[in-house]
Image (tube, rainbow, N blue to C red; front, side, top):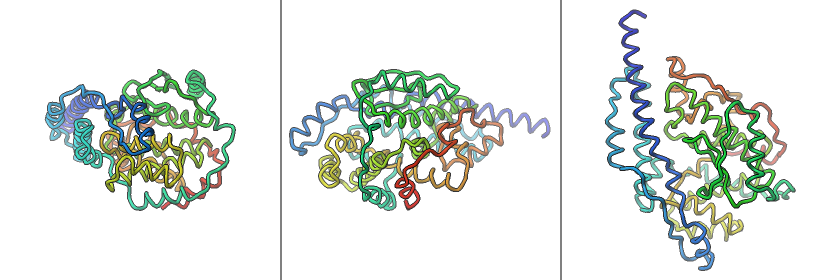
Length: 389
């Protein structure tokens, strides 16, 4: 490489890092799930139950803490033409469009038609194969529950378990208790924190599941992303949910924690998303899951709420398809390392490799412990995963 080429490369990289840093500041304002957690869930749940499942919940959401139009303008003011590598330039175009769509999602929460449309642009709709796979899973008879499924552990017990589990990994574990999350535990990527829901109980199986899902994948990709030269690995590639959740549920499977009941939960989410896009109401979706499939009303409400919140949120349909894709990939003997480099997407693996070749991305520092040995002993799960379309 001659002197002129070196100067051009340096200028290109400076422009790329400037744009990447600008996007990092802008993306920090966007935490979609934090805006989608209703503040009156319990009250509306009781009202819905009291109405004998006829009055749809009226949910309240947090106020937006940024100016949507200004944020859109700042996203599209980035001078991407200064990135001379066409593949990298195209990647950052996709990134800007993706986060602009995310802003529109947040902007329209609580406006059903608008939010539903924006959500579909980000998370898509279940395919016919997804629906068939979900029904195939639900066709299997429930298994007898073991003592490991009894919810006897407190949030403090969970904290102790997660702290012990994380000693296998070479990164810090920050834990906070929260009343503002829908899940029993989840990772906040922006603060590198594992949030544990207050006032709930956990089973032994649930602790193992959450540890391998949240710490083994979501925190692993959080810390791998932070160690990359480009901040987009930490903030997230376009449409990364399917890959990230697929990796996380596959981690549950490899650790031996995945159960048929858990797999059925993912299947219900697909059917709930399908119900949503077909125009059914909250009550209709709940009736299908609780009335037709006989899932208990609390779990049926939770699944219905996750899908109908905001006006129609299809993110949950991606867990099952993500698991299927990661499982098939593992069966083919393909490495998962590139998919753990940060909050990345399977569809952009060629871009990850290109960035690595350009010296703009690093190999992973942290791997998933569960991926080292398959501890699953449930033959029904193997049968299902091998026969999904």
